Length: 247
Image (cartoon, rainbow, N blue to C red):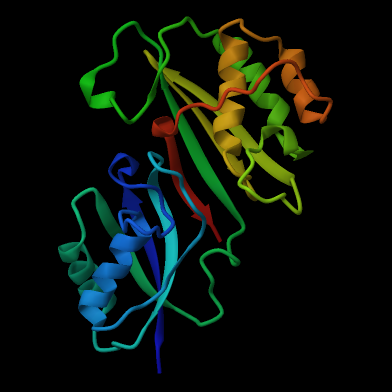
């Protein structure tokens, strides 16, 4: 009988080509499945709560996997896996769950955080971990724009084309929190689900409003699927973090 394990995973996305397995084998999923194969002695399939793009980080990605080795305790699985993984990728927690648990389909929502460094000079330790935006940001406009996203909306205007049409573009955003500490601005989103590049497109729109490039009305028009003016700006991936998956 196999055992299902639930994993909480953190990674520095700059080192990997996203979450989903690819032919070059340098994705988070690829590295984790190789580690399991080394321990199990045969291939296993890892199921994540969702995909993150290349450059996007995770503080609390969730995944599940079915293993046959029932002799290893969760603590020993944790040690064995991390011994096989690159230092930029770590399994933080491991626990057995019932066969009914599914990392993706059991999820009730996700929390994402975006980091913006607003200063003329970006510290080297923030490189690859925040969006360097040297222009002045109006914090009040940033907060006013963020409020527009809260609630149940059709986010078709804030979704990128993944190569196939989305069956449902309606999502419910529980909250959007905007914070500032010195040069660091953060925008945190809690929602029941997110479309492809949705957070990055929302942050890009907020940044354009807060720098005076666009009016708040343009965001409102886009949210109402009235088009909005001009092209859309997607914030770069290095500022985005998957904070937690809610179950």
